Amino acid sequence: MSASPAKRALLDPIIDDNPVTLHVLGICSALAVTTSLLPSLYMCVALTVVASLANASVSAIRKVLPGSIRIIVQMTIIASLVIVVDESLKAFAFQTSRELSVFVGLIITNCIVLGRTESFGSKNPVGLSFLDGLGNGLGYSVILILVATCRELLGKGTLLGYTILPNVADGGWYSPNGMMLLPPSAFFVIGLIIWAVRTWKAEQVEQPEFRIHEVHRTEAH
Amino acid sequence: MPEVQKEPIVERESVSRTLLVAFCVSLVCSSLVASAAVVLKPRQVANALLDVRRNILEVAGLMEPEGNVNELFSAIEPRIIDFETGAFIDDVDPEGFDPVRAARDPELSVAIPPELDVARIGRRPKRALVYLVRNDGEISRIILPVSGYGLWSTLYGFLALRPDGNTIADIVFYAHGETAGIGDFLTKDAWRAAWPGKKAYDGDGELRLEVFKGRVPADDPLADYRVDGVSGATLTGNGVTNLIRYWLGDHGYRPFLRNIQEGGV
Image (tube, rainbow over all chains, first blue to last red; front, side, top):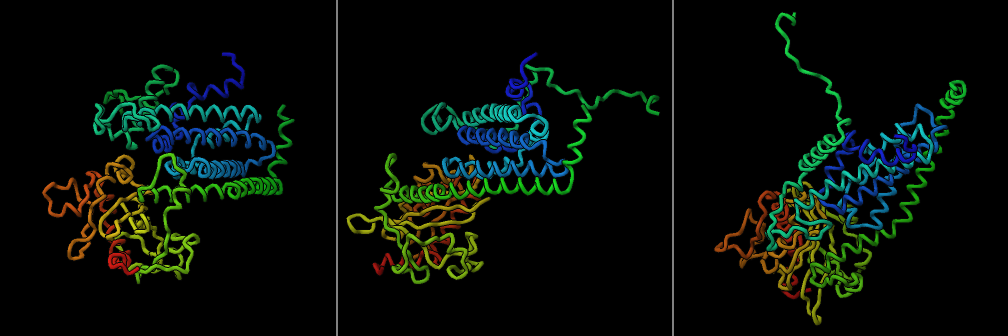
């Protein structure tokens, strides 16, 4: 694997180093906004914009940033970007911004963003950091879109509001599974995706931390 | 290599450097946030107003899918009323009246006595902004803003009544934070369709309108006053019943509706 660092920074987080399925970060918003596809798409764009700009900004000041205040400075930058994105959504995508309610604001606390600025942005050049943020945003987006597609399709029989599976209530044949619209189903769907990815890419499976093995009474003393 | 790296790191950690960096970052970030807020404010205000107007048109039965909201809205007559007397107040411009701000202002609002506050809203303004729809000069619908607590959140909506001040013409809820998939039956057309034609008060003037627990039986003598509830979302339904009880009660729009019925406005 001798791909260029730029290509790796951008593409690795999409499957091989995915923030959601490998690092299990950003789960809170993945549960909350994925009841339908449209708000999820906006959420993906919002997070990707914040992650790439925050990563690039932190990288730009990494040489002058004192270690003692680096986390709070990163948080300040992330928070400012999130506010700008949130205000823009309210101005340009009013209906969707209301569906997303607090979850755009909560990007501030999304571990993916701070995780990347701290572990990558503060150590790498600006261009590469931007690509890394973009890649991680896309990795998050892939999972969010998959989960939202499953949930909206099975929960409502629609995608982006268009009917795909005609509901029984409207004279069709599909009986929507209301549980898909509740938060636990997002856990199940994400769990299934992680299972699938780790079956395909076995190197992502962690070594067990403990192993239970039988001990003879004589050994126990 | 390590020598080259060492020197700037020591300098970077000095107190003055730390303060300087903190100051510069704060300055840049705050100007970014402030300018975004200022630049986008007019659009956001316009969006919010447009959304309220769209909902009023919806409940007025005047909404057209491709229509221009502001143009359609010119057919609707906003009026200010006084809750206590139930009379119109003409010396206040409805354009400048902000019910949300009025509800917070101690001068312009009253605390709701706890025993009357079934909708759990705490305060209500002394005046209200209502909307009238006229057909050939005659009032055809009276649109009243309503709000109240459901299970998790405050529900905001508009209730439209026929000019008899008793028959429901329509209802919409435009903001709520109830459970997705269950409590959001509030915004479903199927549920909304059950409201038109229901009555608020019975022959003795008793306020009876409510969201029933479950499906209203066909032979229910009170079927005229009952709307189907949604199982699994009983508490959200109770929230709707409570807000109807409050806003159509004596502390709410009742005096105004009485005036309408008696033609005394």
